[in-house]
Length: 345
Image 1 (cartoon, rainbow, N blue to C red):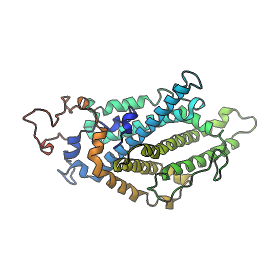
Image 2: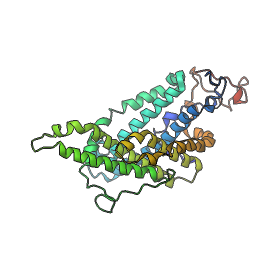
Image 3: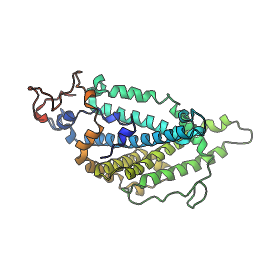
Image 4: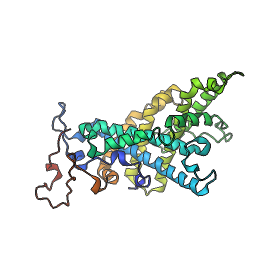
């Protein structure tokens, strides 16, 4: 399986702290099915597999951002520090990636923490540290909310995209099949077009001749932020098929990308329907497609765990001692991981 998470640097850690023996053999104490494996529960499967898919998508976006940053440094078209300025006037894509990746990292780590129970708060499992690290990047390096405001305002200055080859380009047709890799990028391109049109009309309505910029934009900043976030999400959505095209063909990688796109659509469904980017009929198959996506990924979980795992020297047990490894010469360690007793949450 290709490993864009490693090329993306720090994009992978939200799910790398999972301990494989615990994932495989930890038992639940829930009254519904006491003693059953935790991963036998569909809700836990959705959370774990979904976090892996979302982290894969985040890794692809971060890898693309690194490519753009390297290109900006090499060209140096706007000065030596151009690659570091988080504003759209310097680099619209890089500013969008900064806000998007910081938000996504925080969201993914927070969900992993919640699903780990008490273990998610333990320092040795690193989730608490990564969550704080991700949160600190929201205001650091350019406040993400201000970046989204800036992006939304700047996007209004672009010529409008249309259904023909005019303006900034044609809107891509939305495939009917949710499994098409181009479906989610096309939906977000259309959604961005819809939001841009609404915001452009609203700006005109709020801009009488004597209005100051503050008076015009003060009631519209939240909508500008929504447009900026949609633009950033579209970039990240386009990175998934781009990454698949550069990686060796692999079912696990394809399944990760497909599930990540469907989950992003599910999280955005309300806004898509509210702005009439899609109709309820367009999303009627989304829930079933998500369930098939989880089932498609589940057989590859062991390989994906290895791809996202921390290096051995970083993996620690909950009590702070090094995690036992199969190769360790410990006569008291059971040969079968299933015989090991994992502590409860």
